[in-house]
Length: 137
Image (tube, rainbow, N blue to C red; front, top):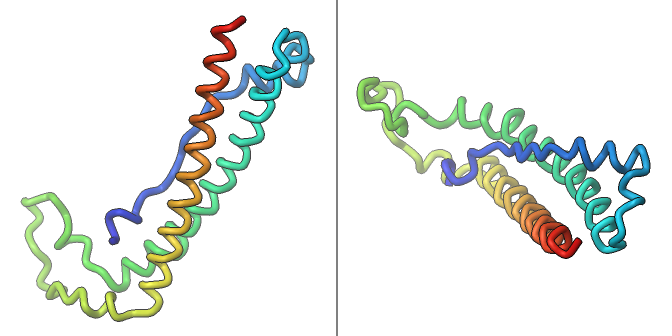
């Protein structure tokens, strides 16, 4: 549960050319209304995605990671064999599995991940539409 919900998000699409075209009016010169709309929608989607990623990453770094630092032993889950196991933690995961705060963090992370996935799918579909429309020019 921890590993699956421990990711931060940074898609970082470079939409500078589209934004510049929108601002200087060049997008209005495109012959396809559908393509123009899809490009405008892409920038709006990207802005929404950046904000969603910011919120998701803030939740991870401000709430979830500090909780784990206090209640979970990363050393015992580390794939690095040369650091050895911790003598401070006896792998008592029942402690956090029985903690309401941990459960709430996991549920929040799952909800954030699902919301992000929906936005990524929408973005992918819009990019595929744009690609097809560009081929028809």
